[in-house]
Length: 111
Image 1 (cartoon, rainbow, N blue to C red):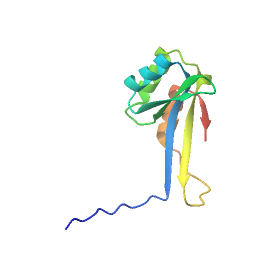
Image 2: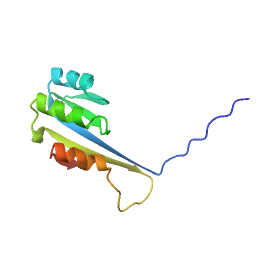
Image 3: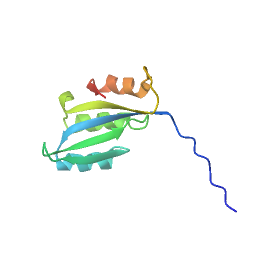
């Protein structure tokens, strides 16, 4: 007889990601290889790639180093804050990692 583990469903989940909004193909592939947890997708309308990295303590410096080495401008990136909730919350605490990332790269916040 096997017992299935009980999974408690979260009412609220907040995800913070750093996004590179205008990468060429080589930059997009380099991002995935060099930055922990990075993903890319093709933006057919803008004919460029968008790179997305979930903020972790282990990858803040990697994101900053990629930003500098690839000569990305502040206008070509943002911090995306996504809130998934089945509750009517009026306030949500943003992770401290968002503030730390803004110290490295002072880009716009998007929700």
